[in-house]
Length: 88
Image (cartoon, rainbow, N blue to C red; front, side, top):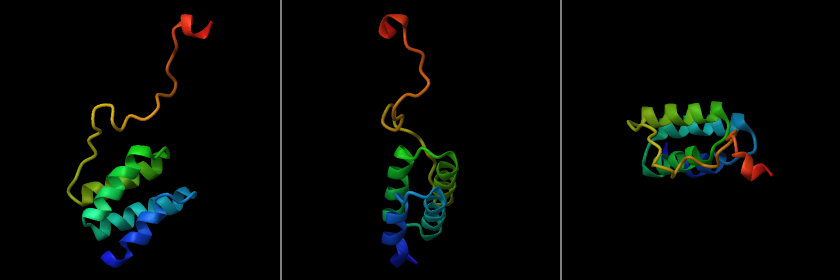
């Protein structure tokens, strides 16, 4: 039901990972451009692996794959070893 999409989109930014994952799944079931855009945008910033998995599954259900734009969806680099010159 596309009338639920706005509330589900808001749920993608909830503090609880369970809520975000459930909203991602539900948006995949609803489909539509608004759901697709919201899922794509949340995938770009989502840090929880399980929620990202739900977003990816929802996008596949909608006939779309996650294809990060070069550098666009990489986000901050974590666990990168810095050269010693930058540490001193």
